[in-house]
Image 1 (tube, rainbow, N blue to C red):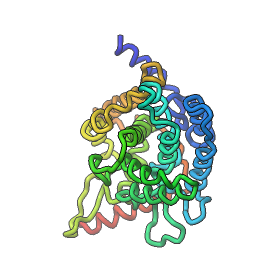
Image 2 (tube, rainbow, N blue to C red):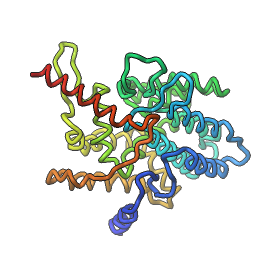
Image 3 (cartoon, one colour):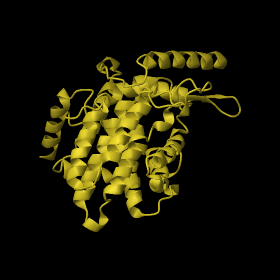
Image 4 (tube, rainbow, N blue to C red):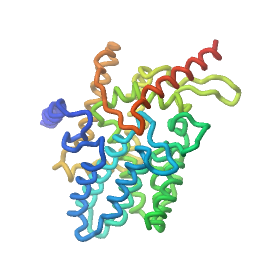
Length: 345
């Protein structure tokens, strides 16, 4: 019976639009529909709680990522783009909703912590954005190894500016649950509720990425270029030797099933204590994010069986500050790989 239900849910996702969330009901390429959805949810969860500061955060997020905030150049990372952040933020709000409905009143996060979580989510990838006048870095992807720490620094400044400075210490810590710069057991949180919020943030980040309708195409065509520029796919070790982890976007996809089994699944189940299950309370016992992830991985296995790469033919939107950023990053990657190959020869 369960297998039949899962199959039915997979079929329901077949007509999903690439610019919508996993339920195909919320546009996630612009902030207003996501804000409206979260506003409605939080208004029900926390009656009477003012949400003006949260709306302001959405507007400021849009200004920052679209290059309108003074001192910043806007988003030019083609995988960690505006759509990803909005998709993740929506997923986090749903996890919070499910959590609040599933626990005793004393164990609820409460409105202030929930609002802080959503704001932190909105700026969890702000560390990829370059400062105006940066003449050293060509693209935000070059901050891949340090972007979470840079996001924590941005959040510290931003929260103080909007009158939430007292909570900036929490945000600086819990944002690290979305990355790999700090070991999870070394993230310093004071209360169990802050740890739970961090678990939900890390969970939402993984769910939103891997449940994306175009996750496979985005890994091949967008995450790989970011990994090249960020020194994750190919890099030079201290001795000067060139090390290659991913030879191409296709090679990254070949290693994706193992990445899910060895990294993502243990995080979701153990490190984040199964926080993804809070979605069950939102979707009547059915988690559309996990269904979509399973579908993506199943489809990838089908592609890998016979190297049937033409099956990956979706053309996802790319929400950036510059419309030609995708072409720019491709040229940068081609030049960098060419340079590495010349050195290796």
